Amino acid sequence: MTPLPRSALGTRELLGLAVAAALVPLNSTMIAVALPDVADDFGIGSGSAGILVTIYLVVMLVGQPTLGRVIDIVGARRALHWALIGFIAASVAASFAGTFPLLVMGRATQAVFGAALMPSSQALLRSLTEPAQRGRSFGLLGSFIGAGAAAGPVFGGLVTQFGGWRGIFLINVPIAAAALWAVGNLEAPVASRGRVAGAPGLTHVLTQRAFGAAFVTQATTTLSQYSLLLAVPIVLDGRGWSSTQVGMALTALTAGMVLMGPVGGRVSDHRGRRLPVIIGVGAATFATALAALVVQDSPAGVVVAITIFGFGLGFAVPSVQTAALESVPEEFAGSAAGILSMSRYTGSIPASVLFAVLVSEGGGGSRSLLTVASLAMILAMVAATMLPSRMHDAHPGGSE
Picture 1 (tube, one colour):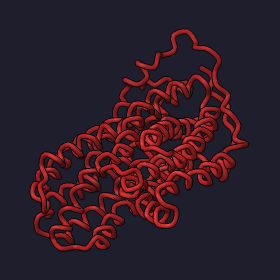
Picture 2 (cartoon, one colour):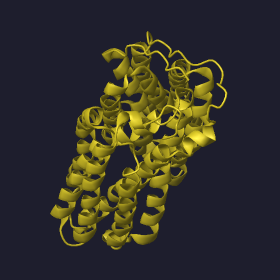
Picture 3 (spheres, helix red, strand yellow):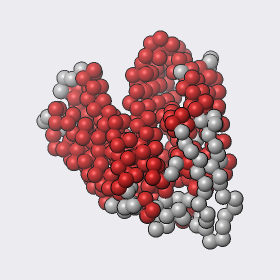
């Protein structure tokens, strides 16, 4: 297959793609603080209001891999534009919902369009960025995604305080509109027309070693990340830490992920995809094991551990994502991005179940949870060794 020509991806367009992708985690986390207001407004229980969180995650889990294939068919640029427009329309509709069922419908529709944002942004980055600069581009994307998830509760609290729960949806309008403007002049990748004889099918491509290794690495590191995010607040609260102190401690985890993404991406461009992942996942593995050892005895040690974990994972993630998308032909980039995004839920859902089963009030059982997370990190290390050591090892046909 002839290599596809690439367009120049300017700073404005790159930031637009990053903002579009960041809308997904931002809307996943910022609505949590508005649930009490929703419950009061519609006269329902807090548990019932929680369906707004659940339905968003379920649609993302199913929608990202499904819409990834649609993106390959209609084109990533066109899909991104329509996803942003639809996200704006669904957010406005949800903000004006007069009944709770209408709000749920608006939230679900928002999630459907949101499920196309991450795969289309990643597919465009893969198609429009030269291999020598692809790592730093994915590093910037990862930083924005991490910032969106981390800023969600704080941002959502401010918006809810001044604009009520309806403001949680309306605030998406200027953000998504800015992203749409930024990518407005983005050229569509020149896609190949038709399949060449003997070209590998999607199933064959996605079962190749590099993509499978990236999927396992991201799923297992996400399991450990969520285990820490769930267990640490319970443990610190049981030691008498205030909500502000707990929030600051968790900031240490997310800050490393935000700050180290571009750094890890640049190293990836110069030294290949495997090395940054092994270094970063190795640091995160050590941190998870340290947290398991000290979680019951040393709150300060736990904070040190999650800080190391955040910096290690932030350093590794850009290379994981880049290696995964480089392992597939451009015609399957949307599908690959959608399935890779699903790996986060493959890790976060088991972490949530294990937390519910193992951890009791006050943090009892946290050591067991983090021991399982440490074992998951060992699996991540094994998977990381299967990533391509050099950029050109990620064969465009998906095989090695």
